Image (cartoon, rainbow over the protein chains, first blue to last red):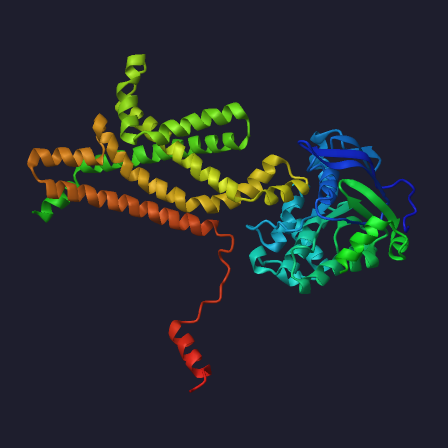
Length: 249
Length: 242
């Protein structure tokens, strides 16, 4: 663990979530320390994405508490916009705003939410595009960028709000194989710079490289929660091991 | 047949006034029609059951009966309930309500064409629902709805001729009256036709410029596609001779 701060940035305590009669999350608890990167793995339908969406209140949890920076955010949805400003999210399908250029995608929220001036927002966008290694694409529109470039713009867009926590929901699942690397590299750089992150992914190479903590979910429950070292030295439970064998072929 | 008479009608006061009234009816009805359509489309977005039922009944009534029927109904039946409206007002109300029903469908399809993921991404950045609507959904929906809306607007210009049945002195009624008084049908109707074409041309030009101004990539130089001949010569140059 790299963090010295004893209070975890995020403390998820026993949250449940159902859609109608379908229980998606069953009593999930997880602590994420500052500057730590947590990788969440598990079969599809196990509730990984729902867990992420509960954290930034896109889906309100039915019960349980989510302590973010010491405050319970789960109860009151009226605070959702304020909470989401501090939690960046990256989606599987990038979801760049199609009518805006790469730079404008990054500038929109700082201008309309934080009230930054156009020129300050533009400077911010330029910095962030450099950080994700595509400064030359500032004036390109999403449909003129490759998948990997789009996802990196999406990461920059989330970073523009200076979040304390980044959530990545299968960020490379929609990418062609040759573009996965460039996105994972950016994410790994951010992690090593100390950006607290939760990453839902099947990229075990990334987990090995960047994760401090690895969480395995199945049918709405967190079945295994291990440090990266323990996980990759094979001291994990049998179900997690079986899933791992499957995704590594 | 006399072209001189066509010109005389064209520049006559009555025809000009008729054309102005046609334009006035069209623009007022379009304004309130788009407004009604926007309200209905947004009400349908709210997912409140009772409001949705109201909008469905509205759409059902106004898309399910002829416009001509609606015009005559409002002008002739409302007075029996004590609501007495001028012919012009009846015409505008009927056309607006009719237009609103079609506009609502167009606007709704535009709003729905912007995928939920785009809204989610906006919300995840800390934007409120209203800001997501204003800065993410509406700009994208606007470009989608513009072509069908343009169609509707040009359609309205022509539909406005129907209000001649309740004796609104618009272009077609003027032309018809002039013709039946002088038996110069060709000349009077040609003059009216020229006015209609001129007005629709203006509308089409307006649509073209609006579409261009909503294109986010406007002002950006695009590599001009190579001319056909150049491409063909290039192909023949690189092709293997057999």
